[in-house]
Length: 407
Image (cartoon, rainbow, N blue to C red; front, top):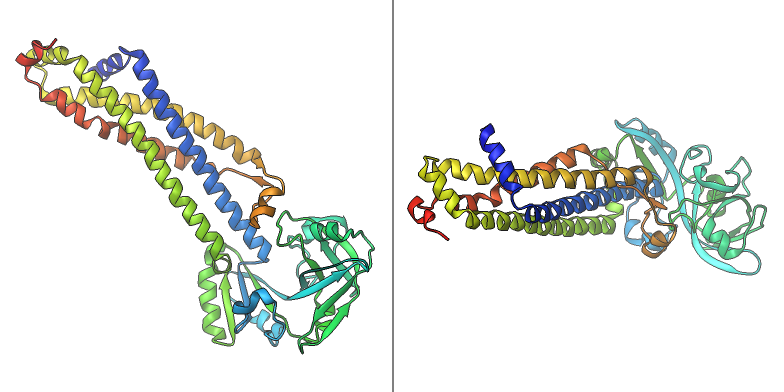
């Protein structure tokens, strides 16, 4: 086998220009596949984590019928006795926290302009380690005073608000009447997620009082030890709560987003298959040209006793060497670029998130995996051998006498 490998390597170097072009084609194709795959997988993981963070948890529980009217932020569909419910939820396997929240529509005024926005009432103590608390860029987090509010950076910019600014927040109550809150801006936060950076956030107790909710809430957010356990816990919650509440996992809440990601993955698969197919055609063309150029040489070898199987083996080894070297170059190229961007990322700023309303974040990181590199390397190597199967068969089927007469 070693002697045939040496001969195959020597034959690959006989036509350096053609071999070099084939190698470059394979390397670029594989390198691009690894880079695109890294960014698609990385952005998918990042979108998943960011979406869960922007929702506050992995599962959302609302009163029955809330999901159909969620865009209207209905105040008459609520959860009664949320404290007892939260305690029951915290005892379930994989659950790390259960948060009580109130979502409400609001008109926020700075005494000059008024903007409609979404309000969120949270328990300052339960969510002191949440994404908003970690994203304060001016002022400080909510304290123990009821007349305090946190404002998203975008909303603060639109209304020209600063720390200490007085606000008037007009809301629709549980009974359908109109009421108002008069908080002071305690802090301004910036998460990089458009759906959060336009919010006004107030203490839960104050919101329940002004919205006439008593102890009721609109949402109970469930945090888990892993996103992969969402379906298991959701089924347990549905079985326990029955029809009195709606339970939605992070995938169900972001159905449109995951449909988009699935479509993108499908497109990448098609493009990757096309690139690999073109690389395989390049290898087949190179080996076929080699077969036709070496017809007399093959005839001489067979006349000297070389078997048809050994002729096939020779050309398959030549293809494997081309494919292996090209795959190695592509793996180095794609792996290096992917590794670099998995650490440093690509800054996108606010533009992408603001345009798409998708929680992309300000930096997109690629996903680097040795397993992916080995997988694609092996795939290219196998396809290289498969692509050479037909040319190798053509070479081995030649009759020595006819081949020796070939000009």
